[in-house]
Image (cartoon, rainbow, N blue to C red):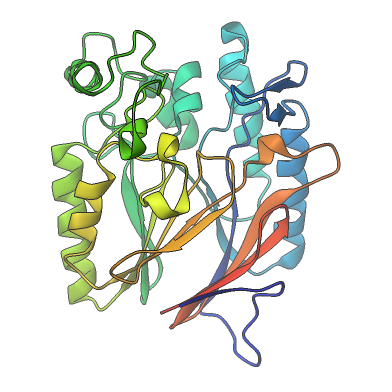
Length: 319
């Protein structure tokens, strides 16, 4: 079960390990603006949220690593500034005294192609420029980082097979000329937008192998994906194209306990039909000056406790 709480602590117990997290920094050296829905966006302030987060993570002296849930630079960043903007944000993450694990988001790909982005984020590609990987911070747990834009109309060369597959996918499911418009799409169909993406066949097979291995090792698994994987935790417009196929693989095994994501810019939480927790995080980008959105996470054998800072709500996810 999941129990939202202001403190998210487990009395008298030491966690196996702890980590920090932040999502959707979307920094740009441009004036404040608004989203398509009119939500204020604070492009220059967002990097200050990250700086305060890193300062706190270092002061706590307990985090084994930090997770960045993607979209570190905004798509509105002037393209002649993209490279320096990405490096500037990565340098702020590097001030954390420990490993930082990145995942890519659509805004990252609006700014730089994968060939430039992955080396800067120090993501070792397993498969032809894809950005999925896994790691085990302790023997009892494995973190699986998915590449939500494996099949995508952004980030790959225009004539790349993955680009062509994505464009064909969208043409068949979204009749609008603007493929970022959900006009006329109903319910779960509203996820078929260009700013989302999908998981390809090779990554799906890799995920299956990783989960099989985790089962053999009796590891609990945390899935990290920029784009959410459960309709109950996000707006339909911010859902992975083939979330259902991904969850079918995940549900074959009982090792996955929690799926974490960003992209929707709002806190979201659900427990799916198989008891897997899904938690989506508020965006650092949309914090007004002086406000924050990041988290500290304590991981136990039987639960994961998020202590949210300011705009991110705390929660104990028990399993």
